[in-house]
Length: 582
Image 1 (cartoon, helix red, strand yellow):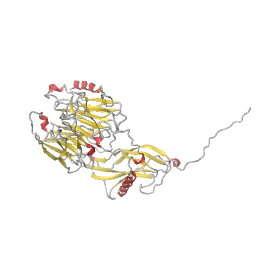
Image 2: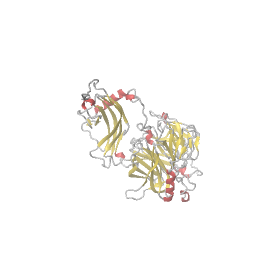
Image 3: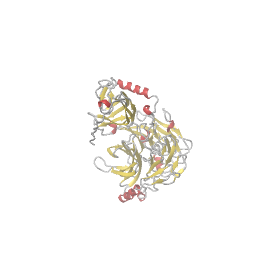
Image 4: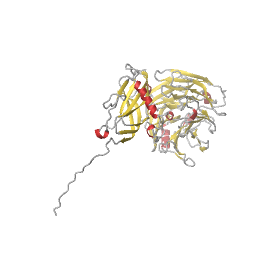
């Protein structure tokens, strides 16, 4: 929804509403924005462009300039802006209130020397209401307070800026990067903001350290990205010729388990594959040649998946940084294709199947509209909005009853149950007196028997009785939920989380997809429904072996108690009548 329209580069744009069933996005024109690097855009629930920014100005969906120089970013900042709906907006399926964060950084300075460092603008944001005639906005006071403190400490804002959906599905983590010294690179600090319905708070500053406790340097230039489920964070460090990856706890807003990927060339764009098994990044080989590199988390292996030589002619009169890249930003689209921009060219390259062991790369995958060009940046977006199971409105309810807005729900439920029956291993969680959801169920009556009011759960996996789950494996499994009562209906049953306990030390060691917001719709009396999941383990270090629990958390919108054939009866109230002595 929110990521359907991309606006970037020199008046360029893409419409992803056509990128279904293997089709490509459609080039669009009309943008008034010309930006070397940073940009962000957002669409509404119907896929209509709402507005876009280069980190300085804001244009509406009809390409009218709404705000001029109200943001702290710069068109030559790697990630000059990022935007998302205000969690306080109760109409989240078609919001009108938004936050727009911005970052300046060093590359927009005229001479990029230490004399200009003190004038770099701080990370900031506006809270904007598009329902008002002039799109009124306010600037939360916290940003100026932090800027004053940073100057006193000598902290320098960089060009890195990203956002992650909070584990609660409503709030947002916004993460910027600071240097505690230096110019192009210096000791790194991640600045974490929490955005809720009550506003923006400065959550923490995380000083980056290596395993020995030594300061970890970061570069001013290069992208910072989260993976699609918000559990990993990657920072490209351009002049340091490296990418640093951390695990991110989207409940607590903290990082852990650092991985440093070193290369022999300057790095810039980064992007995770949809299943987070791989990290893709771009490197500069020469002024006109660049590579798309891929790091495999399970093995630590780096592979060059594409090399591209620019077709544009070097022009010494243009900024040198523009010519440092034949390929620049990487960004995954709603179609799960990773796109790569080529400065001053009219096509985008693409990694079409980034989860595959041998990915397909098309260096001219999609053509842009006439007289438009990509430059160095692609829209800075919240990648989790691409997920079909990621909620874009925690208040939203399609209100389609027990079929979940799907006319073929009954037939599809039966098909899933038949698939589950093929699995040879059945693990009950709380069986309530029967071993399998495929055998006749002895239904209780909640009214008469005073039973515990809860569904029962089964895990189905394995293609034979001898099958095992190994630490380098792919398994399809099913979670079946049964209603064991004849007089109860569970309406709006959803699994909100599927995870391992204990959790893997590194996210790629064991991954379940989907891992949240799985709807079973309604569980009728004495009935079962199942859903399909994929488990991938990539634990080459043998760190995630031994007994584990697959833990689910769930919620139920409504529990309805039926009559249970108790439609008549008697009730007696004892009273005493006293003789009147008068």
